[in-house]
Length: 241
Image (cartoon, rainbow, N blue to C red; front, side, top):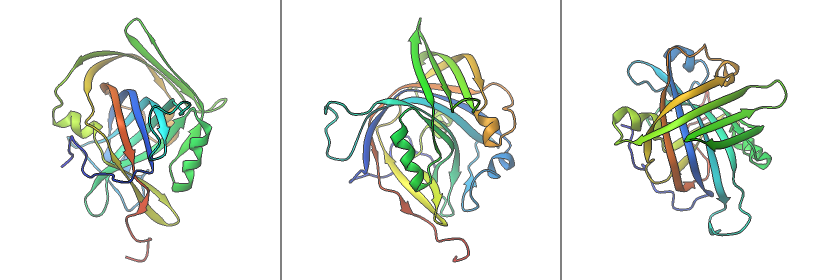
């Protein structure tokens, strides 16, 4: 059961940050189309009989190592955009699998060392007339997106809202192993949002068919107390089970 509050404490975080000004754009897909894009150790999680993929642009704020105060001058703050889906491991634990991660801060690409699919790019987030515009591109001729949303009123999250936004671990794969990164933060404060412009090629480049129908959309002012734990192996290597 997906929980609205963190499943576990991350007592010794490897990294701390805020995730701010975040929009969630969620599309349903046939489960088999998404299952083909995740490792065999993971099973695509379903809601209402569909697998879901979410485009989530946001601001990664005040990124720092554990023990460094958020008030420290010069901490990096930058735009990031994830394309993610929802999975379970063989122990039934829910988490995220990232199909791609676009980032405007090149040093974050070092996270490829733990299997995270980071790509450096040019990203921007602007606000005008009650709307937020998110744009990004991965080099010249690479995948891109342009999203304009109008945040609405706060909501009391229902079951589907929690299922689409709240996960407390991310999976990556490297060295023949599946790894997990635990996450802890306060619950997302969620609001409705309306899409005014949506153009993107990230889903197609990831290997997905064209999204069918209108997306489900949420907006959040964000969470300021994100604690990311150290990645650790969570399943044996293939062939050793």
